[in-house]
Amino acid sequence: FGGRLAGSPEERGAQLFLKERLETFCREVFVQEFNAPLTSRFYSLKWFSFLYMVNLLLYWFWLPLALALSVFNVVFLLGHFVTYRGWLDPFFPKYPSLNVVGILDPMEEVRSTILVAGHMDCVREFKWWYKWKQTGALLTVLSGFLILLQMLVFAFVLGMSMYYNPEKSLLEWDLYRTPPMWANAIWGLLLLLSPMLVTYFNMHGKQVVDGAIDNLTGVALSVATGKYFADPYAKGMSNLKHTRLKIVSFGSEETGLNGSAAYAKEYLQELKAEDAILINIDTIRNAEHLTLLKGELMPMIKYPEMLVQKMGVAFENSKVPYTTTNLKMGATDGMSFALRGIPAVSIIGIDADNLDPTYHTRMDTLDNLDPEGLEELLKVVCHFIESWDEGVK
Image (tube, rainbow, N blue to C red; front, top):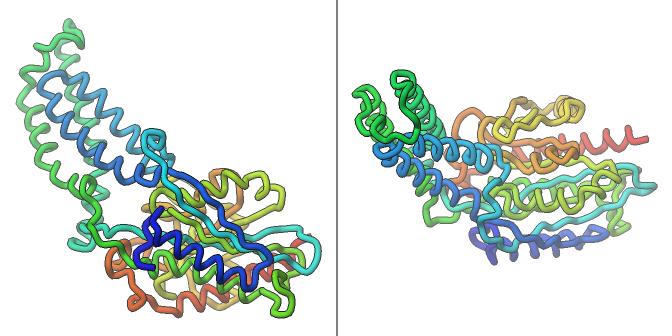
């Protein structure tokens, strides 16, 4: 299908192709169509970068206004981009995308539901990450801190100016027309560091990455899990006793978890009523870096300790090495469920501490994928589901 950008014909074609595959063994397969602001997450970085430069200019005319706008910049950078809360979403147009869900029923009464999920879409290449590797990723992170630093510097300069000139009001311009030399030197440092914002303002290249690892691996493993449990003699049934399986392929994850958010929001009451849990699989490059996430730092979520422990036991019983950590950068579709009170856990198979050269670059291809990671994780996920089903009362 080619590069499967969120909301693209290629993403839709791949999702509908998957639907046909799921229909060969699932009782029901349905498509959830949704509309979402697919450009808001990354296009907003241009706004934050532009406002930073505007604030540098305003410094020479009215520092209080420059400070106010720098505060605005930081607040919305955190609320919209860093924590994935999408505060600026209403200001962006919406585009269509879709999720695909296949359902397998248990042999007896349904008492629990497990969703096994990955996401279908991929991204335009993060070109600075490809060209400059770890340095490019570091500059991207530092760009966010630079925007924060601007606010802190302006607040400090204004505070010191008011301290030494208590008789002046904020509306008196003469206080700020001739800032002290030390303040100008700090301003110069902010200007000197501003070129790093190119990693924000012009993050993406033209090339759409294959997304074989991120995240066709999650989709493939979810489908393989469904096939493992599917009853070959009774279509739509599994050999589980009381656990319904849902095989899910989310759309538009890379644009801010739009597909999983749309699903969790629309089917929230249904998910709660059927005691659903989510096993989210994302970016399984190899077996060496299989990692069970305890939480995700940027969106400030923590996965249920009980669920993480049970998945850890499944790893140990399957004799598959793994590590546990909190995801430091980015977020996964598990966040959309955790925020709404639906128990979830996410598993990745990529270095969580250092930039992998395949991540969001043209190197995310089948050639750079070690299938052992998928084979090992499939054993773990299936063992977890079997143990979960045995414990369902």
